[in-house]
Image (tube, rainbow, N blue to C red; front, side):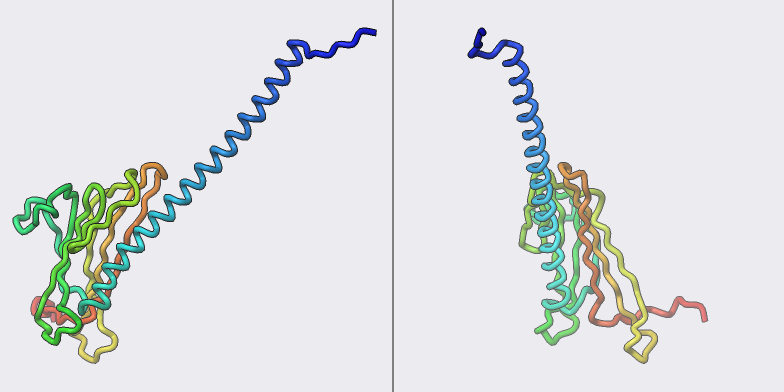
Length: 199
């Protein structure tokens, strides 16, 4: 009886194909898992960035100042913009606050600019760089003011203003839009002009 101690070429080829198929399948699983981990990390970074921007603006509205007095849009050609603010300018707004909370004078106004640039957001004198090179702003900074009745007051002419600031950031790797929404109620009721209203 003849005893062959080696493999035939066909057996080697079949073994090689089986091993390579297993390796490729494992590589695809590992690559898919790594991509999911990277996506989860990117989402976490974007949520953290969004929360940071919302917190710093809301802290100014709620704690450092006595509410918002006015919001207006900014143009890159605005002469009052500094060179730092104009650099990589995409869009921006100027927020006028009702004075410092510690300040007793009600007529003082403090302003801060929120400027969206190509690589981050400049708020006041602090720059918040985007967490990734794949992040960019889309559309314009949308801001609205809505007057609502002040139910806590007996005077119907006193109204409160609700301010809303909306910024959309897109992440090109994730193919997803992240919304930065800041909503604030003016702490100081405003008296609306009723002279043009019909009786």
